[in-house]
Image (cartoon, rainbow, N blue to C red; front, side, top):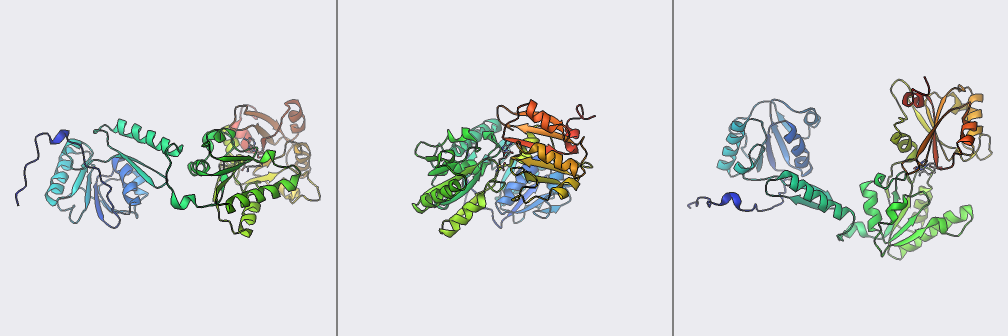
Length: 414
Ligand code: SAH
């Protein structure tokens, strides 16, 4: 069989796109620098049997040893024996050329980091969303490829192209944590679940702006507008989500933060289980950690706080229904994060001081965290009652008590 020479215009012809199924197949990566660091995780994710040949590895690649085999040496002819695919990623053009030559001889497709025109394969800019792989090759211009890739992924994430999700679209309830308020702080999975739902049951603290992006056919049920009466309304929510799911709909139960952090999420799970409705959970970025975090206030700091405790302050200390041992809390030295505590903060502060915490213990109150009106009020256990009053603090607010506040605000607590 004779092999014709490649056509003169070979360089201008388009590549032939293909998805390699590499599971269990040997792939040889020569080079252990930045390019290899970006490629190897994708090869591992595809199930390839990856061998890296390089006398040096980046620290990130070193951390992945075990997921690939490392040959701690330079490339030697014969390395591509048995390979299905090869990547010439060294910073030495001659070595890369030698690897490509061996690949050519063995009929192994080979990418080349330094000179795409000499390679037999090109790596597209890739991304995945909801089981769809996007791969873009833009005429060897990596910047264009990644821009196009990002645009396509954005369209998919926003649900502007309807994807047929099969399993994911089966009826049931999904608890979606919306994050602390900024619509950018929902997770990728949470946003997708929201956009794919038939019915969204939303709380007052759930990020409102995201609701404006829902496709027009989605039924939006605003819990704040359900029939009143405190516990009756939770029962009503349970009833609504179960009923809609039994009608065959995909129901997203959408709340601020995380549904299991003072969110009654598990009550909804129990209601669904009782009715035989399948439930899944998408965790959210929770406010006791995220709200201080965005202001630059860490809830742990080495040498300062070895613990953090999140407490609901909706009941005052000593209330017959309170489950909190405030004496034990007062003895702790770490960070306290109080939620739903604006009203009871004065009595809580008094109780903590009474239990032994220093009156000078720093306090930070962050109101409307991650939202347009965000503000921080700095105080101490001794003065927090006055400061809340004077600054007219209103919920929602996160109150952080402990020395981490002084770490974040040394100018105030010198
Ligand atoms: N499930 C939510 C918390 C619900 S309880 C979560 O995981 O974050 C409601 C309390 O959360 C509020 O009283 C307040 O203490 C706190 N909170 C929620 N979002 C907040 C925000 N953006 N800023 C300040 N506090 C917030």
